[in-house]
Each structure stands twice: as structure tokens, then as C-alpha cells.
Length: 287
Length: 267
Image (tube, rainbow over all chains, first blue to last red):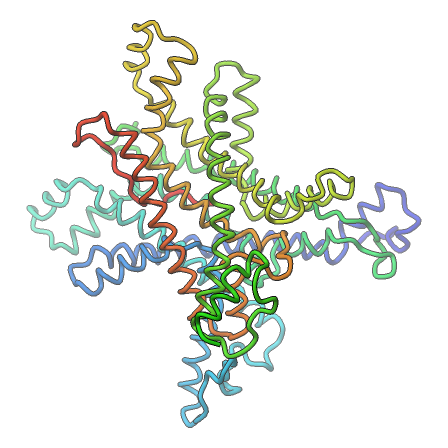
């Protein structure tokens, strides 16, 4: 990075650290923070969409759809979320490969599950074995986002379901008295008003989502936890120009501070949004 | 191997008793159930001890945070803030590396093993979450009750023990039940974070993951794990419900609060 970094062993402490913190691996570490933020930026709206769908299903007049919605909400919430993460990453991957297998290799006769193996034809592999490295990484990231969205979608569905029911019944009745169909009443009356009731739950969910991002590490994405372990581990002089002892403690301390700051800032922003959304509503918090 | 033999061999495998080698091929459903159930012993161990110890510390924290003296209130507040504002997963890692440093310095070397180190983290973590719940309940104890206690000439410890604390617990209990459930869910993180599982003695998720890795079939071990956890959750709701009933026994039927599994908090 800097010109004086050509011989790290001869540097004084300040310059040594300046060089150390700008090595290629450290830049990957900094980029992994962007990965986490991108994950949050994609997952939050996706989970909200899943939640909206789930809540609508749980309120549906069609019984099987309602059972599906309620089942989705209660099953995902009753089991440790980590188990779901580990489950969905493999299950989704196998599901995609199975679908592609059915589509691309219809004349394949062998069983897909042979003992302890899961075998699909070469064209059905996700991603293809000839694909470049970045495709593999993007696919892994995509699976992680989908997993997060499914798990947090159930939590969001629970919040939105409660919020939809919290909209005063008189509002919907008034809409129907004006001749709106149930569909119109839902989209024009219930949905615009439910957000203020949903906000406390959704704020809480956002905090939970932030605090769940280190679990990306368990899903095989090279995230901040992965790099903090890699970079912090003892490095011998033989393998690197920057040998050091076990510094994982300090790297994880840094991650802790990062998360504390992140949740703190989120708290402040969410408090402002609550005030903004309460404006003109018939609740105690409104101004 | 019959199912009964499997149970004899693996029922206490997670504690180091029975067969030394884990099953390697031709996994039966019985092996799945036995080993994952065996791992559940660890989840219950972590959950129960952390819950009991955390309950005590949480009470101290709640009273501390409500204290008018800043030198008591601030540390309690900061403690709660740090443990609630950061992911448990990071806390596990950080604590493990701190314990590792301590071990190198020759202080408390046994803290690096999961049975003690992870328990300490879970204990502090649940104390912070429950402390916040108890603090909220303490703030919503009806003023009239405290004034009535004053009128009877109660003060200090007597007033707290006889009037404030019982009401505080009664108000906090439904939320605290949820916290307890999430604590049990959080115990599955122990062996996925820094803490090593020695001689393949792990918790329920550790064995579920073992089977999923070996068979490459997640559709059997994870539903079994889910089954066990739903069972634990139901037992927990039942037990906490009994306590809740006792806390509410002086109230008329209609005003009693029921314990419901309403998970809004999570780590």
C-alpha cells in the first residue's frame, strides 16, 4: 500500500501498523463489513415481503392457506434459529439442484440419494463446476439471504399479523359502509394504518437481525467473523512479513464495539421514525 | 445393533460414557434420536444453571439500574447495554479468547472448556436481558401499592421484600418466560462458537450437524432436533406457568395474566 512497506521488519511501530492494517487480507476484512451491510440491506426488505405474505396467508379466508401461514409462523419461531439456518442452507441447495435435475436430465435413471450421497447430473449442479469462483461466492451469499429471509420472515409475519388485527375494526367497517370491497378496504385502510402498530415489533426485529449477522459465518460466507479469526490467529515469521501472536481477542473486541455502535445508532434512528410515523395517528404517542 | 443396544451405547455419549466411537455408516433413526437426545443434556445443563444464576444477578441489576445513585445505576445500565447491544455469538468468541489469555497467565485455566466458560457467558447474557425485563417491571409497580406499604410503616428491605418484589415478579413473569425459552434456544450456539467440543461430546445441535454432514441429508436430524426443542419449550412453558399461577394467586380470576409464548425478543 505505502512505499515504505517493502521491508516490514525494519519499520518502527507506527509505520509497521500502518502497513499491517493495509495488507491485502485486511482489505478483504474491510470489504466483509460491506458484505454484512449488503446482507442487511437485501434481507430486511425481503424478510418484510415474506412476513407480509405470511401475515396475509394467516388472515386468509381460505383454510389451507391460513393453516400454512399460521404453521409457518409458529414452527419457525418455536425452534432455535441457528438450527434453521443450518438446515435451510443445505435443504435449499439440494432443493434447487433437485429441481434443475428434474428439468435438465429427465432420462437419468439412478436414484438421487444413494446411501450417504446426493448425486445429480453434472448439468444440474448449482453452480456449475465450470463456473468461476465469484459465481460460487454469490450463490452462497444468495442462499444465506434466502435463509435469513425465511427465518426472519416468520418473525415479521407474526408482527404484521398482530398489527393488521390492531387496526381499529371501526375503520374497516367504515370503509365497507362506503362501499369498498374487502380487498380495497385492506389495501387502502388497513395497510396504511398498520405500520404504526407494527413499528415497535419491527424495530425489535431489526435489532435482532443486526445481531444475527455474525451467523453468516456458520453459513459458509467469508464474513467479518471469518476474517477476524483468520487475521487474529498467530502468524509465524515463516509465512508472512507481518508475524504476530494471537490477536483474536482484539479483533473480536473490535467487532463487539462495531455491533454496539451499530445497534446504538439504529436505536436512535428508529426512535425518530416512530415519532414521524405516529404523526396524525389516534394513539397516545402521536403529536 | 438393536435400538435398545444403541440407547445403552449412546444415551450418555455427550457426557463421555458408553461407546467411544460415534456411529459411522448405516445411520438408523434410533441412532439419530438417541445421540441428539444425549446432546440435549448439555442444552438443559447450560439453560437451567444459567437461568437460575442469571435470575439472581438480574434482580440485582434491575434494582441497581433503578437506583437514584449514579455510581450504582450507571454500571448496571452499561452492563445491560453491552450484553443486549451485541450478538451472543461475538460474546462467546470474545469470552473464549479472554479465557485463553487468562489460561496462558495461569489464572482459572478450566474456564476455556465449554462446561464452565460458555456457562459464564450465558449467565451474564441472560442476566442482562432479564435485568432489563425486571427493570421495566419495577418501573411499572403501581404507586398505590408502595404508598400503602409506606402507610403501614414498612420501609427499606421489608417494603421491597413484601410489596415491591412480588408485584415486580408478577408483572415481569410472562416476558421472563419468553426470555427463558430463548435462553434454551441460545444454548445451541455454544459449540458452534469458539468453545471446542472435547472428544466429540457436544450438544444436540452438534450431533444433529454431525449426522447432517455425514449423511448429507438435513431432512432427518434437524426435524428431530426441532422436535426435542419444541418438547423442552412446552415443558418450560408448563413450569413457568405454575410459578405464574402462584404469583397471581391473590388476584380475581379475570385479571390474572396468562403466560403465552410470544417471542418478540431474540438474541
